[in-house]
Image 1: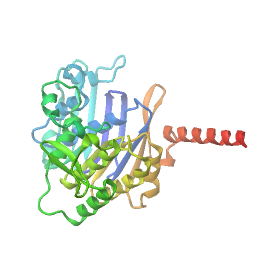
Image 2: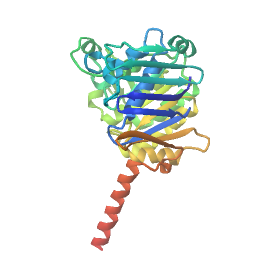
Image 3: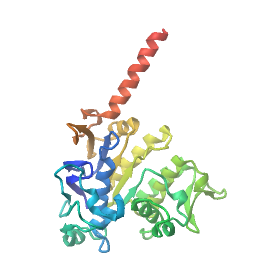
Length: 338
């Protein structure tokens, strides 16, 4: 399945929003609190609702984690606003949830759920949060379910996805290609022992994830998701700030990996604050790659969005503006020192 459209009305930071997605890579940029992660969480909740045991409204509550698990707290906070509507469309069907600001728990009117499950049966989707969590995965599920720790459910889900094995039979050619590329950067592979993740550098002893640089853990997670079959044709990947704690030298490699994955049928959603990451998507993509940039910004006290197939085509581009300001300052300083 491919996600094609999202519509939000009076939801969290948005009064009204309508986005058409690319079937390949979707890159979200914008200042803090403009709603990048919120958009991805809504789309991810819809993907998860393709499972028979997951309700769309329940998943929205779990990934946003409002106080007292009340979905009504996700209604946009503005005078006169009392109801929110969320709509996610695929290439064959749509699912929606409507709820008031007085709604308790996940009490929402959900439409299209049966058809959505039928159309998207077997859909695999993965959300990688901004904070790395696999190094703390041991006993995390038990602590989460006992409310000892307070994380939204994307953290539980990524641990489950990393431990899952949905692949069947030997690795195919594509998978071997990706694993080889990642192993060269990691100088090793990933293994799980006693519910803990380790990096295995060749014939050397296992290294626990806590002792591996956080940037390398992100690439190790990608290795594991490729290996266990959660990133294959027809799957959907959401990744919040993949550049965080990653050495800039690794960013071109990461971009190439994501571009190759979408060429093999993985739809990708990326939220970033990084100029280098966004610009490399521009530079390394082919003319045939379905790539779309979304810039979220504040306008007239509202959160707005513009789109472009090119990073430099965005007019309201806070990342580019920040780096242009830096370059201006560097040039001024250079002139002063001459």
